[in-house]
Every structure is written in structure tokens, then in C-alpha cells.
Length: 346
Image 1: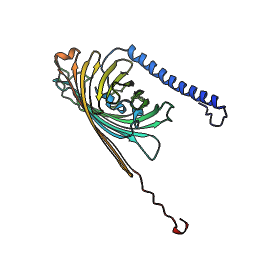
Image 2 (image 1 turned 45 degrees about the horizontal axis):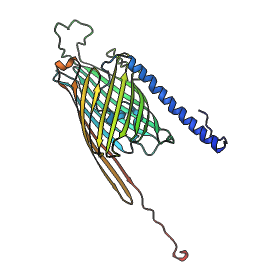
Image 3 (image 1 turned 180 degrees about the vertical axis):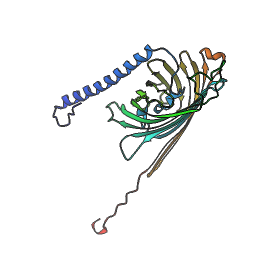
Image 4 (image 1 turned 120 degrees about the vertical axis):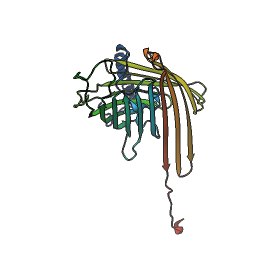
């Protein structure tokens, strides 16, 4: 885009030009989101390679690094998910995510660590990301671009469970196997505080192969969005969320809604067609202290969801448990400026 910094326009033309530029950016973002959603719905519904969380909307940075720093607070978020409870060696996923503004340079950081166990497969990933926020639109909407680099380690054990002999099958490892790869994620994210958000992101962009296993993670595309509807001012707010994800071979979609009461308690439900329906409850508590020189703000959040299985697995598992725990904070100090004067010139 060519800058109009050094051009001179009448005031009416300036206002119209700025409005047109902003409309073009908004239309461009809508086009990207619509295109990805068409791809998502065109694919069949199935499971994903990346870890899955029912309460994903509590931390958008998990699947979109560009969301880092959109809160004024530094966030430390944790997830623990025990999927398909009752099955032998069912998936267990733990994730820790930290994001916030850097301060000494423009932009925000994101650090993520997760551990995923599924049968004999063990996945460990560490991510380091950066998000740059563009100048806000006149409406107060903010857009960010983000990128993260990940270190991905995968290992397989040898305690195979089979109904017939597997020792002579060359496709099944006879020894413990471990391999690692470096990958890349990209994202774009827009939001207006306490009103709406939307984002597009891609994980495993490089599709780096695990050389010891001849396994290659495939690219995953994510489209997310949500809107808050005040039902009774700030005392009662309906929050809606949707996440669509696909690797262009299989797709899944999460839809959910919850009601936040008095900025303290929320309850709602999430639905993944063909997989599960999940009631969700949560609690949050904030502490804000301000004086002439200090500003302290802290927020504690706790959420729980139970996925009631609706697929064929319901005959073998009652569902999945998931816990979300979060601590967010901001501590700022304003130095006292001392003024000195010569009494002779008061």
C-alpha cells in the first residue's frame, strides 16, 4: 500500500480516503475468513492431529499466536485434558501458555509448552512466538500479525496391544523410537475489547519430517470468531464462540455459548457435531488496586468442562474431563517527579 503521508487533500477528501482504506482492510479480512470457512465446511468431520481443547476460547493464543498481547495483562494459562475416560491408554494432554506485551520493543510474546500422550505415542512441543499489533482502526478494532517457531518431539514405545502377531510387520517399530523437528506457525487476529474477535492461523507450515520415523506433520488451518451480546448491561453477557479447523483431509468444528454473570461466574455448553456435547462452568475473581504511584491488577480464572461422547465411542467411554486454570496480572509504577525551585525567583 502506498503511503499518503506526504500528500495534501482537502479535509473532506482526507476523511473519505481514510474511511475507504479502513473499509478495504475490513473487507479483505472478511474475504480471508469466508474463504477458509468454505474450505472447512467442504471437508468431512473427523479428528485432528493437533491437541484438542473444549475450553479453547479461554486462550486464543493456543491456536493463533497473533492473539498474543490483545489483553492488557500478562497471562499464564494452563489446560489439563483427560480424553475418553475409561479407555486403556486414552489421550492425556497438558498445556502451559504464557503471553503478554514485551514493553521495551513493539509487539507481544507468546511461550507455549504442551505434552500429549496417546497410547504408545508421546508428543512434546515448545513454541516461541511474536505478534505485532497494527495501528487501531477508528472503531477501536485492533489487528495483529503473528509468527511462532516450534520444537516438536515425538516418541513411540513398544508395548503394542494386538489380536494377532505383529513382530514381523515392518511397519510397526520393534524398538523405542524418538525423533524431533522444527516447525513454523502463522496467524492474523482482529478484536474489539469485550465485543468481538476473529482470527485465521496455520500450524505446521514447514511440514518438517521426523527423519527417524518417516512421519510428517501436516498443515492445519484454524478459523475462529466470537461475539459478546450484553443481556443486562455488564451484569449479564452472552458470549458466543466458534472454531473451525482442517488439514484439508479431515475437519472439525466447535460451537459454544456461555453466559457471564457479574464478571464472576459463567456457565454454558459447547458442541462438536459427531463427537461430543459439553456443559461448562467457570469462576473468575479480579483484584485491582490503584493509587498515585502504583497500579496493580490481578485476575484468577478456573473452568471445568465434561465432554459427553456422542460418537460410537460412547459405548466404551463416558466422556472427557478438562480443567482450565489461569492467572493474569499487571503491575505498573509511576515515578514521583520532584520539582526544585530557587526561592529567590518564586
